[in-house]
Length: 422
Ligand code: TYD
Ligand code: ZN
Image (cartoon, rainbow, N blue to C red; front, side, top):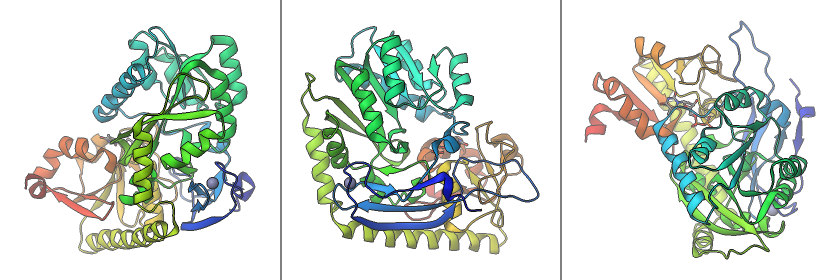
């Protein structure tokens, strides 16, 4: 289906306006990674080009095409999973955000892309006033039921002004794993500037492009992720919009993320050494020149081939293979590696919204972990590899009975009960 009328092709860089792009990787046309489908005899799905380019001026990595956010986000299948890893992480984020730049007691926290409100509840429990902003109407209902007031809107300059008018200025504006989803970053930063109190802090958590490149996390490339940020690129972006990067902390979640704190240029805070240190590491990794991206693309090709051959080989030898965690990454991985229902019998996932549906593009049916445990496969392809530790610990029984996992990136790795004990 020709769907290009609901996608915009990127011409100028959303950070610096540059037009000199290096081609990095191209995965052909792929459906949006969270567009889970009802099972049907035949499918007609919208597909959009999925390819990454790198701006030679500011080294933003960007998708070539921006799918209309109304299509991607108004009804959203990704709900924060019930996971110890992510719960502990959210509590940690709440703690650093409260202490690092002296968030006032009883202060006001606004979160963009607040999903079901789990992160904001951690602030609420610490006595802060909170407001979520999220366009997904199905998730806003859940957040509101949990007592987290949430506006069912995209965060832009107009929403930000309305929030400032109705609720007052924010001491903290937070966006976890949402800033890379935004096309009009200028509009959002204008909103942030107008919403922040003079000493307020804007904190975002984004995947770090250096970790993505080093660890070959090419399955994090999907239509929601429009930007893959280096710290240096964020410094350039914020400078252009009256904000200043103050501090950056590396975090282990989602394959390597950074928590980036910024304040108004006119505000009281000065940058800390971490900002310079991480920019230096990016430079040392060669990420300001073409070669690193060329090498990345070559390594992606190798892993794609190895993973496809490994899984097809297992199936050819008569083993039953299934997916573990119907993550957006997993949907991408299967689509771009050419694996589908021919190889994977099913995919287990804890998210009720995904169960009973089939995965976009590859049409692998999603079932609950309970169903999966009744008839487990010989081999699970771990599509939620960012939770590997938690999942391998939880599945010790399956491993003990001879079950195995394949961790797909950076190179496919088979984990069995024995290799784990070793
Ligand atoms: P996640 O990696 O959080 O994000 P993304 O969709 O952006 O790639 O998704 C993890 C998926 O894995 C999510 O659908 C929930 C599921 N999951 C399980 O099925 N079992 C688990 O133990 C955990 C931690 C997650
Ligand atoms: Zn640029």
